Every structure is written in C-alpha cells, then in structure tokens.
Length: 546
Image (cartoon, rainbow, N blue to C red; front, side, top):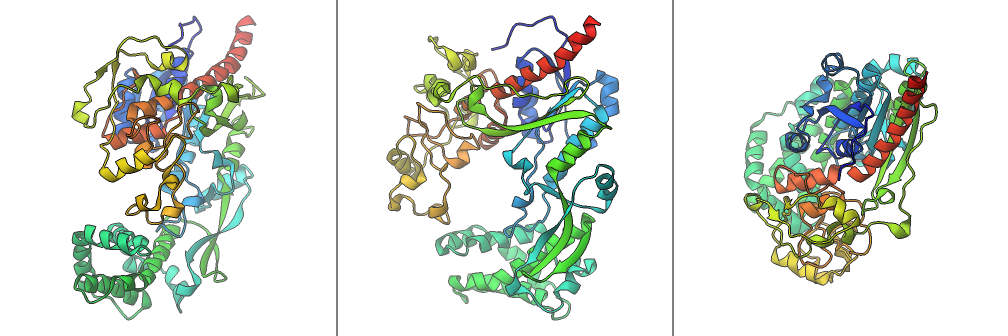
C-alpha cells in the first residue's frame, strides 16, 4: 500500500548492493525518496529489481561505478543506501582454502561511494556482528596512508596456515617462495572436488555416495594429476600423489573406504596452506612474522571494519554524525524476529544527533505468521516455474498486515518444491514449533552428515500464532507450512518478509527463495526511511524559513 503523495520534493537515492530491492521498496513506500540508480551484480536479482523498479537505472559491478558521471546525469545524490556483504574472519576458517573473503572489499566500495558523492545521509544494512572483532580487514601495503591519515587502530592477527601435526622441515621456506607455491597449488576445481570427499569422510555412508556422485570428475582429475611429473621428492608433492593414488585405488577395489580419510587429509591441509599463502602474496598483506607455536601462523596487522568506516566517514573531512543499532523487524510490523544491524550517517550540519525510529509494536502486539500468510492456506501452490502463470485471488475481507500485503488480484510466486516420500514422512511427524530434532531417530537417517548438530531452523514447522525467526533461504532450511504438509512457498516467504503481492520475483525457484531470504524487510526499511526523511527535512525547513 502506497501513501498519498505530498508536496515535499523527494530526496534522490542511490542503492548499492540492491539485491531484489527490499531496501529500495521501503524507501519508495514513504513517497519521500526517489531511487535514481541501483547497483546489483547478480543477474537474477538484477532482473527482479528491474521488474519491480522499472524507472530506476540498474547497473552491475559497483567496483566500476563512476560517481562523477552519475551526478552529471542525475544531479546531486542526497542519500546512499545499501547492504554490502561482509563475511569477516569467521568464514576464513580451517574448512576453507581461503584466508580472505572477496566480499569484504565491498564495504570499502560502499565507503568510496559516500566519500565521493558526499550525500546528505547514508544508511547501511548488515549483519549484527559487523561491530564485532570478527569483522576485520587484513592490512595491505596500500592501506598504510589511510590508516595513518584517519588514525585507525591496528593489531597483530594470526592467519592460520597449517596445524602442528602436519608441519614439516622447510615449510617456512615454502610459504615464502611465491614461485614454488604456484607450482604446487592445485587449481580451484581440483581442490574443491577432493575437498568434498574429505569433508564427508567421517560419515562412511555419505562418503560412499559422494565418491560415486563425483566419480567421473575425480577420475579425470586423477588421470591429469598422476600424469604430472612432480619435481623432486618434497613432501607436498608426495602427499598430493598419495591422495590421488588412494582415490584411484579405491575405485579399483584396492583400498577400503575407511582408509581414505588418512590418505587424503595431508594433501588437503597442504593445499589449504598454499592457498592462503598465495593470497597473502596476491593481496600484498604485510606479514610481520611467522609463528610456529600452534602450527604455522602468518602474523599480520588487521583493523576493525567498523573502526575503518566510523573513522573515515565521521572525520572532520567528511563530517557525518554516525549511529548504529541492531533493530528487530518485529517491532516495525514484520511477522518475524529478524535482527539486522543498521548504521545511519547524516551530515553534522543537518542533524548533529542521529536517531532511529522507535518500533511501534510491543511484544504482545507483534504480527504473526497467520497475519502474513493465513489467507493463502487453501490456495494450492504450483511446483513448476512454467505453471506460475498467476493465481486469481478471490475477494475476501482482510485487515491489518494481510490487507497491506494483499495488494494484487493475481498471486505470483506461490510456488514450492515437490515433497519426496521421506520428507513427507518427516513433515507429518513435526508439529507447529518443532523441527528436525523432534523426529524419531529412524526419520533422521540418510540425511545430514551429523544429525545431532543440525540447526534448529531445519525442518521447522512454523507457528501460526507467533512471528517466525529470521527468514533465510527457506527451501534449503525446509521450512514447513503451519497446517499443510508442504514446504513454505516463495510467496509465503516473501509475505513473511513483508513484500506485497504486487512485487514479483524472477529466476529459478532456488534463486527466488534466495532473493527473498537475502532481502531487508520493506516494512522495517520504510520506518527507517521515514525517520531519516524527518531528520533531513528538519534542516531543509529551517533553510527555507531563513
């Protein structure tokens, strides 16, 4: 539902990392902002954004953004919004071949946009952990001038390369030799295929399935690797060969499946080490020293993402008053207890004190799952994309949140996955509010590698009379309808996020589910946008009066 237009001139906005457009939608629903340009690199999300925001200039890679050209074309940009991905150190762990998340640099792109555009205000949405110690940047050679200029605090941080049990003579010489690293490092595809096998090795049933599923690819890799003439007799080459020989021997019946993990583990550990060492070289990180106290660690300098952002944008040079908080979407009318980190900055001469909107919903007034999707209970979803032609919506009396979301006579995206027999058995056994852990042991077999560690959001049957938890990709999580023995549809997930029915998602089923899960609830974005407009408008009114 859109509010009536007022006579106030609308503020121009650029949306970075726009996704499907939830943040943009919330700002537009206030009728106080106009989105001029949006950047989104994912083609499916871009398609969805364009369909629902046809008047917006939608562009791709934000790294190539020319903000001078944008201002020449669209005039002064008043507000920058967006949610740059930022994984932090938590994802650079032992299970991965990478030390540095490629997404982290996108926060710097967001800051570049604010510095170059100098808007009246900006709003950044992100995960609530952004202010934690986990979210840090490793210091690169090119960072020195900025670190000194804005007095950003740094500290020594280890990048773990290799566990103690795998350390060998000459390992430090190897990680300092870029040419040798390059010779010994497998390509990403080969590593990924063998890593899949390694990760399932503790569950022999899963391992057997993975070996068969990946057999064709693995045999090609094995042939290539075993034909490669390893130079010398170094341990990395030897363990690489041993790993591929073991897989080949398994397929020939010479090695039992329960021996594979110990045969391939050293090669995987060495490749992780080499991958991280190569990143250190390629990213020009400043290594202060190497430590062998806990295996092999490269000691580098790092600085907190939040400090970087606050020190630069809050400096006298840029002049923003900055405030951040973790907001609960339910307090702003969403039927879900989604916690999101919101950071708002406003030029100090406009609003020296930044404030967030007070949520108007107390806990006993929260909108519920039933308020969002109850009217769809008896409308059967479709299972195939080519059948999603739109479902005519019968006229019924609705109010509250349902009335706001039900803004179209035709329902699109009411599509879900077909239920397998084993999934149907599980669905029928799970009551509202229960999840995978509620199942009997015989219904937990042949599924997750370690069923006991499965998250509580997996196979969750939603409760009608309460808000749900954070909406993610509900297809992957296997969320179950409160009263029907089926998965939650894309449209139902979108309703839980407070997207109105007139907002249509594009792409495959999984892409649609992912777009919904990644989005900012528009109803919360609208509240933030209204508060921001009042702060900016207060200054504008004073200027008009003088």
